[in-house]
Length: 581
Image (cartoon, rainbow, N blue to C red; front, side):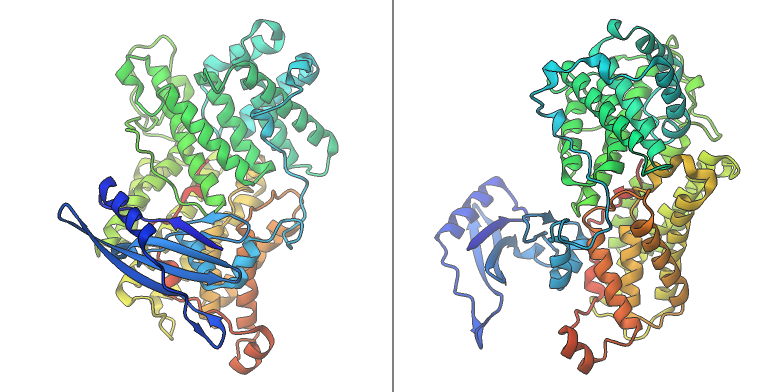
């Protein structure tokens, strides 16, 4: 069976059409065989059209019964173009696809159904199809899904303490009167306000579940509030007529849904939310429409939250971030507290030089934005270390110097900033090393590689503190979803290549502590499909540490071991969305 996967781009639509026509008329040569074993083959076609010269490389690769043929401009052939694994899953995140391309064992791991694989046992995930279709919703009594007024007021207070500080899309002074009015007179409010109320109940109860994951009463309430949210969103005509309020509800709901469901349905829903946001112009700054300062800020908060959550969801499944073609000029939200914004103000307040309620989300937004600039300059040969130092100085000067580590949300933000900057530093250094040394892995561990491993270990240590520090327990429902795909992958790759590394004990302590938390803590959510790859990398590193990579013994017992080299770290489109809120 032959599958054609179109990857890469051409110089124009006309050239694309010509190439496609030529490909259809071109006979692909048979795959050569050696002693009955199939090997990749390729041909090259040169097409000229209106003075445009375009080279097309047709490459055939054989994986068991399935043959994949990819079409790529020859000039782009050196970059990975994604991978289609056996279960139909497409992966184009460079780090993950690099590992999978080189290792059939890892491909099998990510393509194994969850019921068969060895992933840690979890409760069945919440399904999300009720947002799209639910034949019973017209017959559901809305009132039976709501908590009592006392329970509702308690859930609102829990939301203010555990969710709002890390999912800052509401303006509490203007939202709280609407919330209490809806609790007191539920029949008098609009459907989008009902959706917001149920999203708040869902979020608050989710934050409680991380404290007591085995309590069935809490799980029952979560399912009830999810059903109420779906019904309210349906009655608000969300798909045809989204509002700022219904989008705020959706943003809160989807952020918390990740704790219950790491499947692709969540990522698909993010696409729906993004389109709904664009349909009311959130991707354009509110100043173009003469909106009030408060509404402009709310739109900015919501838009950037949706964007960063979309990046996070894509990374769960090894997908690179696809830039939207639509123009986007929405400014970043200002560093302000809610009390600095007034519904009656006509002049926007100046950003504050202190820690505010918006400092935490701004930390993640700013570092992720700077990453792309650092990546671009590193590709041009600029040394990464000064760029990372400049980023650290900027964050320290504008945000971190105002933090007080004794205050939970401040400590959370300080640790998160440390993890993010370590992550950026590891990526930038690795990219620079690859460019200077090519894809050959040095046999001796360099001092730079040792320093990079130490950075990755420091990032993992900060991440573990986010999960285990009792001061931050109220935010654990969110931090537990920060799966350490990239830092863990780097550390394990390093341990495979250099099993006697200078920092080997520190590295293994962090690896084992992370696995202990993810696989044995019942409060930990499903880490997602990429965790199977992390587990396989750990198994390889263990074999290296135990001396089982001896050629004669290892080949005889396990087959030839894949060598993880610098080529696995060709990360031009590296995805860093996982640390967004």
